[in-house]
Length: 354
Length: 117
Image (cartoon, rainbow over all chains, first blue to last red; front, side, top):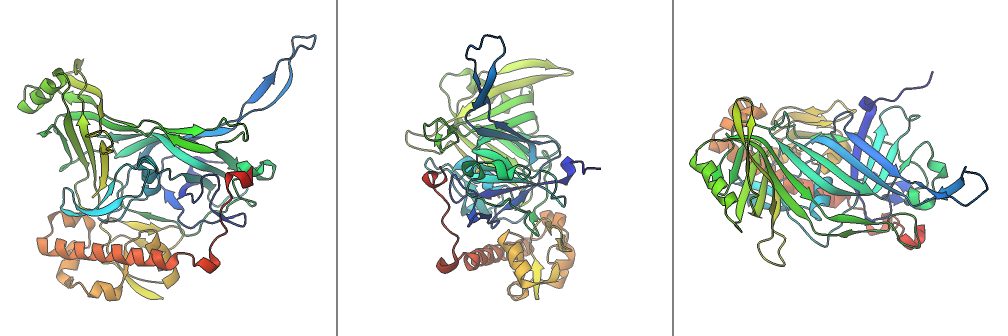
């Protein structure tokens, strides 16, 4: 009887790549240094290879087509509801650091401040940074089952979700390609991205930090200097990174580069309890006024070392809606975009591990 | 083998090993190479000598071994904990530096687009 696969057997790792088109390797053998286990839910990781055949619909005298040939190759991936887990130790980055670096284009910087006036790590944007990463899906302990690996992974969209059971982030992106252990020998050298042997799972992976709830005492949501965390029910922040794959050049069927288009950061107030408070009235008035900009800051977590702060600058508040919602009326201010403070700046959004 | 103290404000774990870190100040004896591996992956362990340089009292340790208790800890304890965190950050950076491949045994350069094409 064969071994049946199960999501419970999977361990997913991410590793920053030294070179865009190669897994980190030494003479074709994967170099696992720096590979980090990430904690993801069962059924949350989806990988899709996009390697369609090109039809060859020449006239043959019948209505049946003859076989075509393989076209270009790319892959897409997503992770739904990945817990955003702080490290637990202020001044150190979380396990998801490699993914966050990709979103922002560079490593976080060390500093001091934040809600606890302590050591913090701040992620901020860098236009010229393209820190691609690899993803590895190892089937723990059953090497005969198909293992998966993706190179040149980029995040296209990250949505940070507040007020759920856990603080989470939904991720989606693209990758150069996905290879697997079962068919490793038949992939061409570009697909194998520098490897000559299929990687084996790293030993003694680590996890640091504990998941935090998506809500709690000490959690704050401050918009235009108004504190509204006790009104918020549905709240999210989305980063569209603007990364675009270049996978249509003459000399290769694969991705050869990633370039950066415009990034956009938005805050979505999906459901706030409507009331006549001065705080909400301020936000309503700002949303009604043309060409207003405001700032927004959200803190998830209530302990030093186990919190994140999301800072959005120069937000143009979208027109709001009021919607009947059972026994309450919901105030909605959907998809309001943050912006740079001036041409040439990249200060629309920062994420602080604090 | 070396003796280390755990200074994290939340749990950490070395999977597939007996090492789980569930208490602030937890003492652990473990192989140095494994400790180095863990520290490189940001598991906040510090050698006992560094721990001793910050005078966390037995009473403080007893009171604040549970991470949740730090929320209501005294400023004196928080100051000591933060000092240990800063020492860990320095120690972590030192370990990363030590583990950087030397020029002589560095990995082969990864292949460029042209080479893999």
